[in-house]
Length: 313
Ligand SMILES: NC(=O)c1ccc[n+]([C@@H]2O[C@H](COP(=O)([O-])OP(=O)(O)OC[C@H]3O[C@@H](n4cnc5c(N)ncnc54)[C@H](OP(=O)(O)O)[C@@H]3O)[C@@H](O)[C@H]2O)c1
Image (cartoon, rainbow, N blue to C red):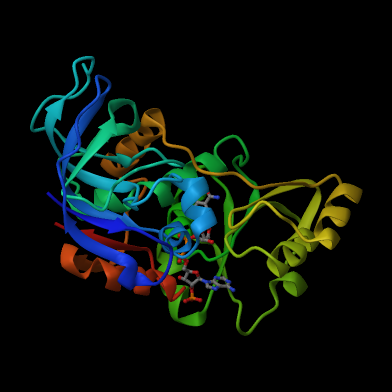
């Protein structure tokens, strides 16, 4: 089968399309013939750093990057009862860990997959994995009906799912992006939009119950200022928060957390239900063929992605 091997950290040229053996399937796994793969910021971040390859995937080389797939079951392991050959499935495989997703066949734990709704395209299903799981896992248990929720980067992969899920929870959703993505964010269900290039959100917002921060750094310090006493924030890019933010949060009983999304078949089934009943609509703004996967990385690395970027096989 064809797969992209990464022998060492570096630029997109280090993703080398190669011919390797199909993976063997363990008892609790299924072999998925990949139809679509989604690319996330973590993909290019891991590609570019030996430390990140070691901690996110493996200390062995080469590795196969990627976690988000949709496809068709080609084989089932001896202990698998929930899936059969020819089922269409989707999921985020072994995150954090070795997902081995940039390949024509992926061995995936059955417990991390869901059946793809029949009306959902493979591209849309592949898009509804890491980014959608992140939005779901962050918002669940942290947001209630009536909360004022600030979602930064509402036009991005995580943000565009977070707007839809928070709105469905009954929250009042305020989101940030540049002006060109305002209409997109409002169509997803946002109640208010702030163009971060024109308006300092920290000067116009107050009384926020919960912030979902996709930017990190200075944005965390500014976001704490708009949260009401006793409120909360999850910041996604990294687990280290500026000292000023931590101090203000402590003084005003605000909980700031970093969480890392986890592979989870139950959550995938929740997302499958949300696709079926229209609670979430994935937005795939760009698709690339498998032999142009490097271009998909460059697109995501631009930081300007609207919704999701997907590679098709
Ligand atoms: N901890 C975890 O488990 C986890 C999970 C998922 C993602 N993440 C991290 O979360 C971050 C976001 O991920 P993503 O997939 O949503 O990224 P993404 O899709 O690449 O986000 C792109 C979007 O960000 C917007 N944006 C850029 N600068 C902005 C700013 N200053 N203020 C508001 N919006 C801005 C852009 O809109 P404009 O073009 O309009 O500026 C663009 O639509 C990344 O750092 C990612 O690594 C972490």
